[in-house]
Length: 342
Ligand code: NDP
Image (cartoon, rainbow, N blue to C red; front, top):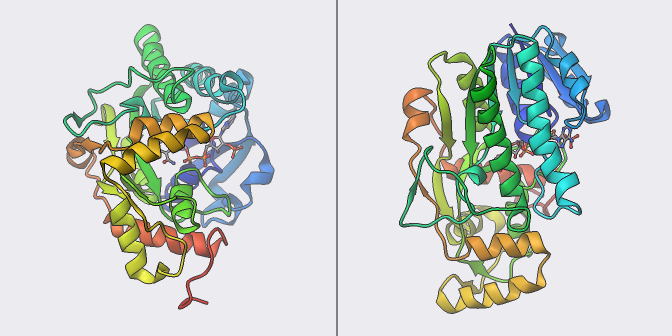
């Protein structure tokens, strides 16, 4: 069986490719430029890997890429909070790109599509009084408010609409990760691991009242593979382990050798701190401002039982994820080395 992975050189997709090759599948990976595929060519099982160039904005690229594939794992989508041009840099590649991939998959007679959606398609303003599940849809984001969230929501809506209207050859399953962290197979600093790098590099003025639904990148990759293999997989799957606040992340890092890094100290995670942070957000680029104003003082609460029950996914402890992500940031030079490790 041949599996197409779009955006194969990305943070999550590289692990998907690694796991597929490890399980003996033939894989075709799309990249925008084959210069970004060096690490894929070093993977065990590379003799079963084919790399092709494809851009989400060019339908024809995916018509060719999908040919002869039974499964498509569509992860490619821009992951940027502060785009220069929202339409060009986010919405078009995310939404039209998804349509291009699905049209090509339908033409090629693909049997299953696994779509990497996001928590961003469930909400852009978590509320601890509401337990998020696969039934939720983000109805608040727009081109002007959290546009990355909007791109993910509209891309997924477009995908389900396509399935509904065209009744294609494939069944579609969507995976909804929250904040994905963990070791990277490339030196690039991914937007989500950057949250930890920023914490360790002194980018935060203090400990903010903010929390994330952490999930390990290797578990997210595993979720994609399970969603492809399990013929009974259906619909959407929320994919996050546990909500962890900034205070807990900082304490964990401090206790594990990162005490000399520039971790935030000042306690801003209370009512007055929230006012200060919200006011300060006006000095930040618009994307960051949107994000802070919709997430400060809000704790995501979610139910991940569907993915555990139906796909049998077991999550790694978040402590392992965070510490292995930090060690990896150190390895790639994104943060200074720990004194002990130097
Ligand atoms: P990356 O930025 O590492 O991966 C994004 C991938 O999309 C890259 O391979 C990139 O290619 C590709 N891409 C972007 N624009 C285009 C385009 N116009 N044409 C072709 N390919 C394009 O991020 P992640 O691995 O984190 O993200 C992968 C997916 O997971 C995305 O859909 C993202 O929205 C989703 N996600 C990520 C989360 C996270 O916390 N990391 C959480 C929830 C969802 P190139 O390398 O050439 O830039």
